Image (cartoon, rainbow, N blue to C red; front, side, top):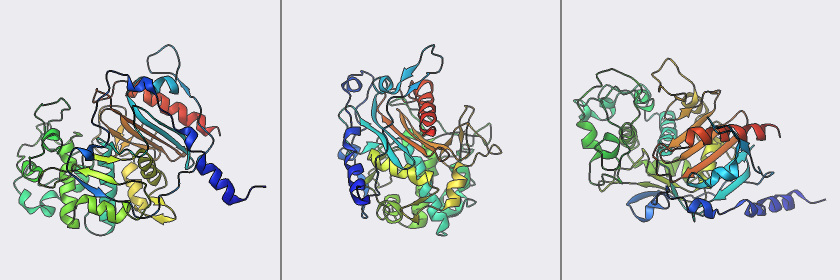
Length: 385
């Protein structure tokens, strides 16, 4: 009989057959450049790993999966999906074991992929740590953390208001290239010389319809300024000290910054796909990893709790503390970012799905009609094991 150490080594070696490259995905005309290794083209802050990476041991391969796209008369498959929608990486974990891992369009496991708005959820995890450390609270208002915001439309908004995208400030959100909008004005890739602090402090108009759910990266940019003010360090350094350095990641996490050193916490983080999987496992396991509690357990519960007493989006998904909550709720959640970035977390079925892409459609054509039914089919299949 093989010893435990030998079995573990065999399972670790078995990761290689899971890797795949698809020429079909690379040939899609709708795919964009620029999502791979943005730190090679823009200024950045870097959080380096220090501890040995947490193991991603291999389980029984997922195999192909059949699903029914919304509004379609016929079934489709995981294999056909991966060739249609500009996927760059696709990883699936079940009960902590890696059961699928594939890469496309020349992406490799050691490439750092831009997160888009998945970065917002990373910032929320850091805010939970800062609250536990007594550096911040959900009820503090912007003017209490940033005194020079006294005349800003954001002045009376609380940390919780901002986390729930309920600021009540009049903001414009747009993903169209070159269009004037608040999310683009605070994006260091689009507006590298704009002062986020000065821009947001200058906002004066409240939304005429009052407090409601209004999603905008500028809100997260403000949260990043507040967190940095209270920790007295960059958000990347806080990430490195509390999570990225000691927890056990493979590669560095990069936050792109503007020429003033302000980080694009709202969407300009780049991370390796396997490290996204590790971060997702952290959320699935209520903030614990490797035998240690890194993010407060009650903070994960607050982030993912369905609160219909708070203003919510009009669509089927709800919003927690800078994280999306599907209709199934029950602790289930997902990170989401433009152009096809998703991390699905199901702590009930113990399934994590990491999906990165570079689709030209910012709102990701095919996301709702294909990826969500595919997610459900994967969870259903793995739940039978």
